Image 1 (cartoon, rainbow, N blue to C red):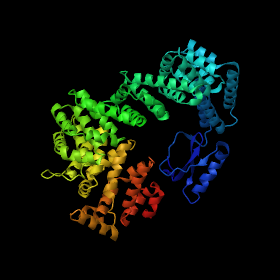
Image 2: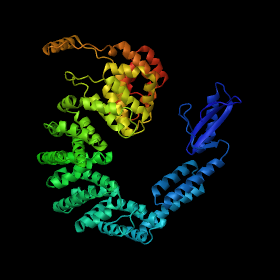
Image 3: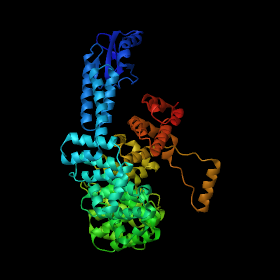
Image 4: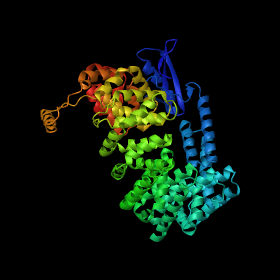
Length: 640
């Protein structure tokens, strides 16, 4: 709801109120409308803390509308808040209940119902803490697990009561007897072990019966396991260093065992805990880097497993290699080479998956493995022969990851270009899951574009690949395929001809912007899309006289002609593309992207904004669309 003219010529204003919004209707519009509106609000200001809303026009968000001349609405709101506070207190959430009652008290400080509720809350806390104990509350919950009163009581005692390590230990033992999945039990255990007394209790339990105690703590959920890892890696919690090291070893082995369970949820939970364990105390785990432990971790890098699990497994693998570089690299090489030599598809998928996961974090370790004589030839040959979608995906992910290394990129360009082009052509009209391979192959071709083609081979048509990827992006709902396509377009759009081809099809450009706008919460997609827009709107960097002379000397030394400037990067064409980018509705995307507030995103948005504001005729359009209010301050100068 916004301020504006009503049918009878009167003027309406909206005022912010603690409990909602108030509509003030005043006389027909005149110069004194605003003054009259303020005057009308003064009666409510003194009693209900009303303030004129600073929200822009047409952007009101009304939670509740209360007529200015009807105080029954205030009473109803207070009753509603009191009901919410009572429900929160019954659930053991006393602090939240207190905040709700305080809100009601601000609305009407003299309300008897609110005052009595506040007194009852304070008195109940004092009495329960003074007369009860954490241990008694836990026993009550164990005896009556279905009682909401018992649940709220134990949660209140965990938060407010004072207890020593012995009582915390006994309380945990009693809570472990409650059935798994009980929400109050899990919250109570987490609350206890988050305290100093609870941490000492966990240390005692793990020292006495590591396997049993860990199983009981594991059943309480991810947050509890994470807290256990923190306890195990905190030296001050343990009486001796030997006790802590023994507990670390036990927890490490127990987490590895969890990775072997068939349930993926257990594997993800264990891998997160392992990553935290190694991150906090990496130096303590050198002796644990052996072939059996390493193989368990590497098996979690399979491309068929969830991305979250693979991400954590990559971190743990990197930590293993950091702890013991020589031994770790030897074990990694043995794992990949031995499985790559086996004919079974599952073994090959494992080998390619591991190599692909290692490249982004440790390219110096993975590159020699990839460049082993015959490895790439065998990869192409066996993948072609198998016709397996799983193996094809693993092989293509390895090639894509290997493009980060220059030598690997050159090797891929020399031995795989024709095969990759075949995959793109074969899957260009395919509508099933194998379209993933075509998209991935196109991405790899875009990545190796800087490598000159060998004599007798056809150059890569980047414009055609960009159109292919944009078409795939517009016709699929799969997030993985969309991210791959966006990344490929970003790589291809560094070339002037590709920029021209992409920009001239305004309908497809508009579709691409709409897709990006609907996926601004996906960082990979947003970054790739903004990179493409930045490439489309980037002006050629002017070279100084010294730089031009240096380029001529470099060309002379290489016995080649001086590189000709791409006409598609001339200022006239770039300005035309900037106009298109504005007209297809890119500004809302930039406004949303700025709110992501990551340095890379802000840098891209700044570059785009500078380019769009370069031409004087574009600046008015940007200001009209509110761009100057969203971009970083450094960009506003250029717009003005």
